[in-house]
Image 1: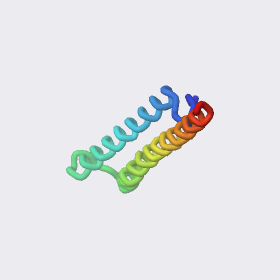
Image 2 (image 1 turned 30 degrees about the vertical axis):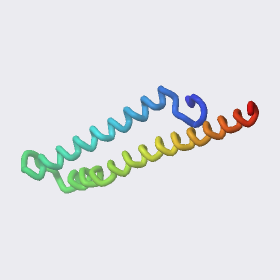
Image 3 (image 1 turned 120 degrees about the vertical axis):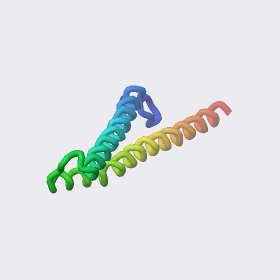
Length: 93
């Protein structure tokens, strides 16, 4: 639930932060899996390699997009808050 001025609530912020951390952990795990396969520690079938490579390609973009969403919401919230303050100063000034 939003706390006002387009900022995320503490709960939403916590969920988004956890999601960013989860995506990072998944990416780390995928990279470790790929490294183990390249070093011959595990065997991956062709379709498994394709899935690993697709994840390695897509996860950074997902993390970046999530970060952009959070940053844009924050930017919009700050702009709206500044407009609100300017309106308050105009009414009181």
